[in-house]
Amino acid sequence: MSTLIEKLEAVRGRHKETTARLSDPVVLADPAEYQRLARLHAELAPVVEEYTRFRRLQHEMEGAQTLLAETIDPEMRQMAAAELEELTARRATLESSLQLLLIPKDPADDRNIILEIRAGAGGDEAALFAAELLRMYLRYAEARQWKVETLSGNLTGIGGVKEASVSLEGRGVYSRLKFESGVHRVQRVPATEASGRIHTSTVTVAVLPEPEEVDIQINPNDLRIDVYRSTGPGGQSVNTTDSAVRITHLPSGLVVTCQDEKSQHKNKAKAMKVLRARLYDQELTRRKEVIDRDRRSQVGSGERAEKIRTYNFPQNRVTDHRIGLTVHNLTVVLEGALDQLIQARTLHDQAERLKALS
Image (cartoon, rainbow, N blue to C red; front, side):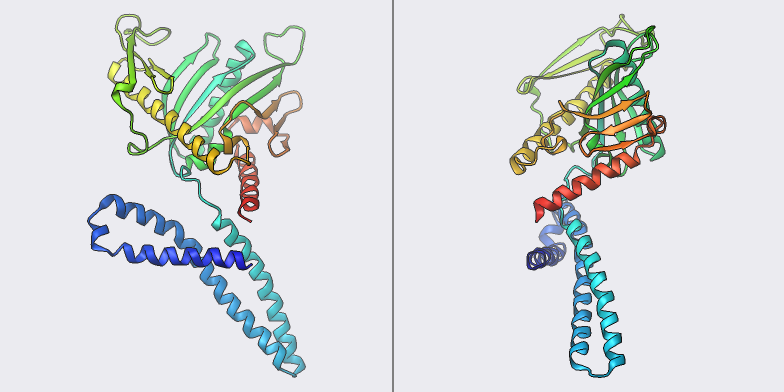
């Protein structure tokens, strides 16, 4: 308890200091610094408000304890004991709430994202399931009224997706979908399988928080930009103009291509958007590894090579292997009903963070 109080007092001190600085003429003259402090003030405010309620409750408990110790009237003692019991239960609830509020916030939680989906092992069947996963996330985004923009797509002739990138914008996008990064495995009998054998295929999902311009500075000299003629479905300009763009970031070796638009300028802008997000994701991963080397969960490390979820069609089952959760409503999940899976993974992460905090 003493450690918790010390941390809460430190937060209260920072909140008070930030409040004072927001009135400082020097800060008011610096829009960037004022915005930074305003965000910090907004993040600290809920903790301070809850802590104020906690301190008021502590004071009430002390009064009830004093009354119980000093009074000899049986009825008064009974009332004081009942009040103390109620206050003790409320304190336990407040303590849990304060511990959750003290968990360091992921700095990317409020960011928009770029969602990348790639077919893995399994050929055409993997591409078909990649298309189903993309549709699942788009249905989820639609239900939450997020803005969706297609950045790039590489389709197969039978309705599958080899790879696709979409931008999702809205409130709390990254905080909702950040645990979706990883390898998604599907087990089912493909439509083309005559013998009825169950096949296993994989699809890789990457959730990249979009950075602000100031987060990632890209030196134009570090880029190699190639233009070429688009291939595949795409309208009259396909194979007639050099509208497709390939950008290579030389220091990291990252390569981004975009050919969805007829305009070379638009394709370049989209490719730069994806490149900036990938570089930002790399930087976030590096920071997380430095801060939390011993907590090597899929999200904490940014590693995407491990299988995180299995979709078993014969059993109508979806299993999240990271937390051992299984639900038997696969059809509903693929229609975009992801909240049960997302909330369970979020609660697990909060529990792990609480352990680290203590």
